[in-house]
Image (cartoon, rainbow, N blue to C red; front, side, top):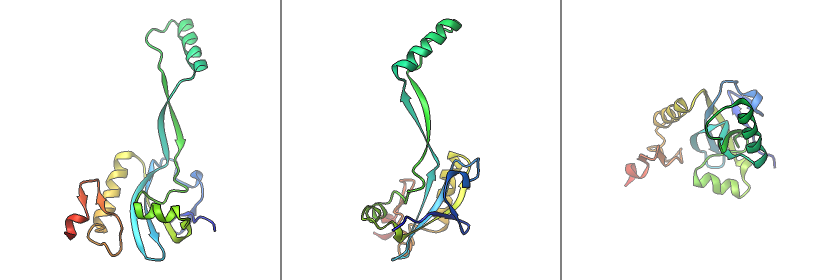
Amino acid sequence: MTEKLWIYQGNPVTNIESIPEDTYGFIYEVTHIPTGKKYIGKKVLYFERSKRLGKKELETLKEERKSKGVGGRTPLKKKVITESDWKTYHGSQKEILELVKEGKKEDFKREILKYVQDKKRLTYFECKYLFTKEVLENRDNYINDNILGKFYRKDFFE
């Protein structure tokens, strides 16, 4: 059983090079094929983390500062950017995570709906898709249960 790739406009997306260069992340729709239920979400392409500097890096920095006469404190952390887990990602919804954990990745169709250039617009377009497709009201077709942690499906059906 092989994991299905992401699809964008009918074409497979196999690696980071097949994504437009200025892309920060994307809006996606995952469909559970046996039930037809869908989930819409967003995914970033890169993780940015702060990592503590090692002893050698700290020593190098101190030596550079002494030779250049630069004052101030030596930073204890550096930013590290790594590719995210976008290739294997299926969503954060509990139902999806359980099915994926059971080894049923092949039961999902993963489609990229839109590439987005920055963090703010990524959240905007996720919300736009969630509201226009009425995911909270359309519980027969979508398993999203909230939007931004402010609007909940339970508010429509209690």
